[in-house]
Length: 311
Image (cartoon, rainbow, N blue to C red; front, side, top):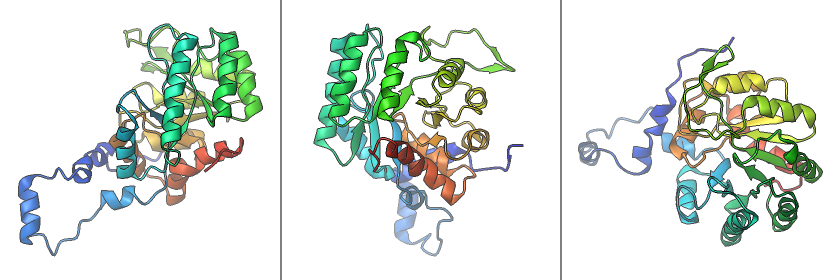
């Protein structure tokens, strides 16, 4: 039974962005200066709490949402994010080898500019098998630590098999964009969510994780608006599927329920460039200190240890 204790809603901490950006109402700042609240200590200091933990952001993008890397760094400083795992996936268009090489070059450039802050995942399109395998060799050789793919081909399509086998050899994780439409008791509503037909869904992950139990898969952004509970329950008996908690949505008890379903070692902190919400939903959950540290940093770092690329 999921613990239904009443937690501070994660949107409360999302609103802490006002504090972090010094955007308090003028009358409050004036009162503070006048000493009206001088004898009152705040019950909760979100800034102090946020900066208490080392963080690996396991789902982040450059040159996609925040412009150049300077935008990412600004948020990393604000939220105490030690490392950002970055990619520039193919979100539109055909996704030719020229496309994915160009995007990977952008990520490699950022990695070289700011090596202490960014580590990259390459992207590719498995419709181009030879070029994809060549790109894996090139990008891993230049320091990338995994794969981030989008909706060109489903994760369980046979075209992915040689790519997955290569990442098994490398002991690296495969991070796939995913979605699960809202539903009830297994029924998926048929309204248009604008998802591409080849977007991977939980059943695709279960299928490929069963075929390749030695591979590691990251199901993207359970906080992205889909049926996260259905997804997590689908993965319960597949320990090689991890989930990241990124996304702009803050469903109450999402993190607590995911932890209860999957255990404390299979959840990664991630933002998908939605920083306030993603940090807030971890801090406003009912996690222990040890569990927070695992989700914020240790779990992803333990995956990186398998390839010797840990921080």
